Length: 424
Image (cartoon, rainbow, N blue to C red; front, side, top):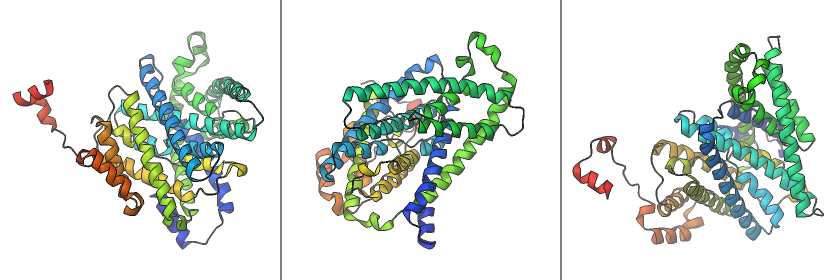
């Protein structure tokens, strides 16, 4: 809705060059990124019993991001005459889930599912941004060997974790000792400053935000034993509610303006381009097929709703604007970016309406057929008519027809015949 509002304003308002809007998008994107990660961190509770869930969310993130990056990198390399380095750099932003869309979308879900998706979207943001800048800097220094490249990354990551931990403790102590009434936005300003300084020093600045949020929300874990005497529990307890509220409201405002401004800057002529539609269709189907397979292989009891929760958004756009000029793929059109964001958001919304949280994931063959059938509706038939026809014939009607689920009462009061079938 925000993107469409921006597009309408762009049609009705004066024409503004991309170079004029881009600085505003970068500022809004950076502030939004900080607030989104902070919002996610303040909702995460670290407990020993959650270790398995955290591990599965990390495994799903790594498998999905790796598979999507390789698939899209291969697509750009083979069809756009791009080098492998450029193709991979373009593929990374499109492999990152949008926590800006996921976090508010899962607010009404059960606590377990909500927490899992917050973890996964936060991991996706952090890892995706780190990998993107790691690759961008590494590709710019082609004379370095692969070992030196990995060593530099490890060193940067280690320093980032150490610096983030130190500043997180200092910020918690600072927050509880500020006596002025204007303390919460002051703290946010300090976080933005730390993010900017860390980025200038080529550190993983988002780790400061993430670790600070986790430290503030898990005080018993990060302040064990004698360190507990440093905390003023009553002060922090009173501040936490207001701080979470301000963080959510600020993140919402920044996201709103970002997507409206991005929609304002879109060139609608590119959306009618035949090849843009072709590339978008292939990319979107590939993204969700990989998502389906990743969920199947990493979850003990994969749920169908997880297949739909993979939108792209703010992080993807922000990183695309950060691609160095010497790494640009001339044949890549930003219309592909818009199609992926719009269709993935619509697909998520559609899935959340039609699928219950407890619905198990269907067999892979049926799931892939349903994905291809759904996305085929968004594009002209001539762009994907032959592949879709072949897929339908090979998979049968099961991939395209909805199988009705038993009513709840049928499971609670099963007949003898139904009970025997389920036992079989």
